[in-house]
Image 1 (cartoon, rainbow, N blue to C red):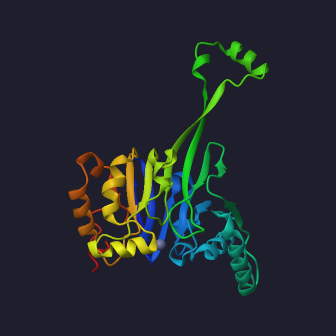
Image 2 (image 1 turned 30 degrees about the horizontal axis):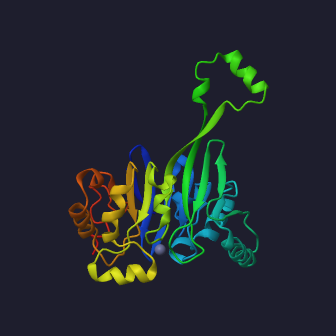
Image 3 (image 1 turned 45 degrees about the vertical axis):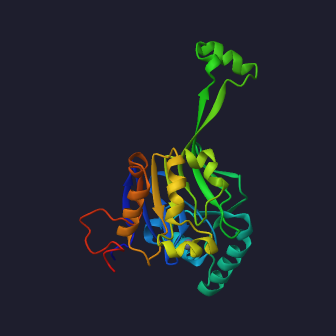
Amino acid sequence: MPTRMVKKLVGSVELLGYSLAGEETVIAVPELNVGFDFGRAPRELIAIDHVCLSHGHMDHAAGVAYYFSQRHFLDNAPGCAILHADLVEPVRRLLRAWADIEGHPSPAKLVGLQPGEDHRIRRDLLVRAFAVAHPPPSLGFAVIETRNKLKPEYAGYSGPQLVGLKKKGIEIEYRLEVPRVAYCGDTAAGAFLERPEVTNAEILLLECTFIDDDHMHRARAGQHLHIRDLGRILPRLACKHIVLTHLTRRSPLKRAKQLLAEMLDADTASRVVFLMDRPSGRRGQSPDESR
Ligand SMILES: [Zn+2]
């Protein structure tokens, strides 16, 4: 079966995703073994061990039960959903209902987080939840690589000297955090855009739902970003790559790219791509070409 997922190389990181407002949003980062939102749980997501759910709207959350069921069916380890703590119980109820319907339960790990809380997914990798500006309960997530580094004041010390310090209980290392990918889910502009794990993320996945000037009221009412917001927001970010998601089907991608090019300086523009802008050579599959 042909996949609807877009494959995108962003720097050296491969993203697999599909994101159109109101229809479906799902993004997988196989290198980090992390996904963002379930969408309708395409097979590319089933292979991913940790999926962060930004909020409960159906276009983002529909596939949660299918994800766990498929992992069980394929004899994979149970898989893990990382989600707002307030959504854990409702999702558990959904999984219980599906267990009744299917006739057996599918093992599922649900990790509930509040804004600001971390969950470690690998020895050197953690997921940090942060608050976004969308009807609650909603979260954004940053996947942060952590490295232990020698404190600069001990740089000239020999191995045995460092061992001696450690034995005395002196902390000779500090933790360096390298934000790899930040995902903001659905959101309007907000304080999260000042957070270091967002502004310094190697890859920022940011929504841009509306582009038409007469859709500004829709953006404000639904707490979404309008492309006019991005003219202010994007130049202030230090992210190497900014990937825009969640564009409405109402608006052609070509027009969105044109508007961005007009609004942004060359440096900022060179860092921005649209997730759904399929690589050339895949004719007839891009959302703007199909309409
Ligand atoms: Zn949405």
